[in-house]
Picture 1 (cartoon, rainbow, N blue to C red):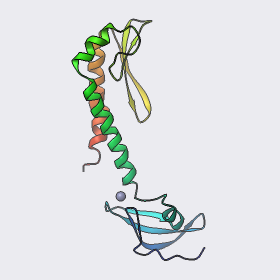
Picture 2 (spheres, rainbow, N blue to C red; picture 1 turned 90 degrees about the vertical axis):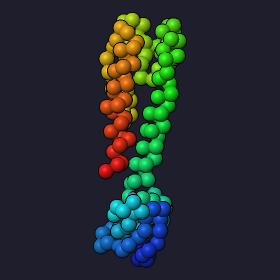
Picture 3 (cartoon, helix red, strand yellow; picture 1 turned 135 degrees about the horizontal axis):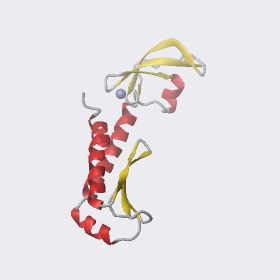
Length: 151
Ligand SMILES: [Zn+2]
């Protein structure tokens, strides 16, 4: 592969600064400056293909935005009206995110999804307790993720 000069070329948020001596898959690794201020390294191939368009901040921001949306959706769902209808329902859908009814044991189970994993928060006779525990878990697991970006 010819040594392509990418100096000052922009690829998404990255601006190629200078090539390093290193190669990956026979492609020259370039030292790049990301718009966010971070330094990133990407090969000529990655930059041209558009595989690498930021230091990683772009993906983090997208994930953060998705997380925020989930969090907001849950806020809207957690209105008291849904509590009343939830109690009437016999199936495991309580209408409240993170709380389901276990008919076998006649209890409400609370859980929360974090990073694709489901964390069990316990089982409760009273649905309100399950909701309370779930809310606390939301504060614990979701809030730090949302605030992580701010330094
Ligand atoms: Zn960045």
